Amino acid sequence: MDIITQFFGYGGSALGYIIPFLFVLTVVVFIHELGHFLVARWCGVGIKVFSIGFGPEIFGFYDRHGTRWRLSWIPLGGYVKFIDDDNVASTSGREAFEALPEEDRKRSFQGKTLAQRAAIVAAGPIANFILAIAIFTAIFSAFGEQVTAAKVDAITPGSAAERAGFQTGDRVISIDGTTIDSFAGMQRIVAMSPEQELHFVVDRNGANVDVTATPERKEITDRFGNDMRIGLLGIQRSTSPDDWTLERHDPLTAFVMAVKECYFIITRSLGYLYDVVVGKESADQLGGPIRIAQISGQVASVSFVALLNLAAIISVSIGMINLFPIPMLDGGHLLFYGIEAIRGRPLSDSTQEISFRIGLAFVLMLMIFATWNDLIHLKFL
Image (tube, rainbow, N blue to C red):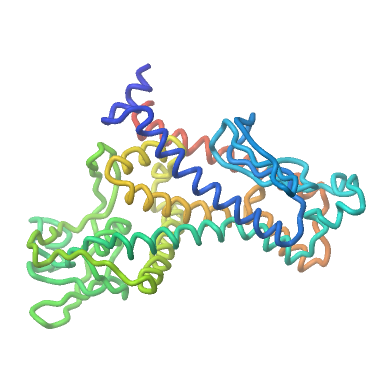
């Protein structure tokens, strides 16, 4: 009971967390699997099942092609099962293929060309990127964004900004060559670059001035009570109405901005993972389903647009992670197809089976580690 009280003790009810979580995850998973499904059907592959969730079926129906569309009880993913798949992980063995009638072999996944199989596998992550770009484009064009000028209104005494030589009234133009259009854009780069030297160009009284600063690593608590470690310079934004604008963009500009947003999320995520591997960052920021549920509920309490924004971020992350060359993930399948293209023949079933078992063990360990982080983060442990 204490854990339940803690989890829902941030001012929301159980439904206030579960419903936004299910909304975000269902949309992202559905689009991912729909990517696999549409390209597979376009290539003429027979499909047994399209499932959102795992485990026992809640309800379902058959379409005119004989595919069972189903919603299952465990909402932590989904799958598309082809007629020659051995299991829901889309691992296809030769025995399953050879057991099919000759007519069905032509409709099997294994019966398709290497290019078709690669396209079917890659379609899932690509669909996630398309979803994220579509959401960001809609937000930037329909709702716009509240933009604050990247202007230094005040400097915290003794801060990294003061030591670097920032002055009140400076307007940040770029960071490490990246153009800065808003205070939020500057803040995001700084927050994700603790203890990393950054090169700023600022407009000071009409002249461009170079400033080099290293954000300090600080632990802060957000409005929902979540603790996080980020980079801080000690610069305060302007509160003047003259420095605040609501910008709505035309669809083309919004699309370009959406692509840049996805690129930023990917590069920063990969940068964080690299820092974890080399020991520059702690892995305790990696989160799992519990933290996603918590954040979904918190974001939903702000606005539906904020929840859509979170769905886009998670969609980019899932698309990126699925492209990692780990067996069990789409990237692992693509790695095998690359090897097949080089060798002129696929790896043996036994080699693939061993690889998939290793990949499954790795994914399960990662999920356990992320869940452990969630429990510590939420002070359950």
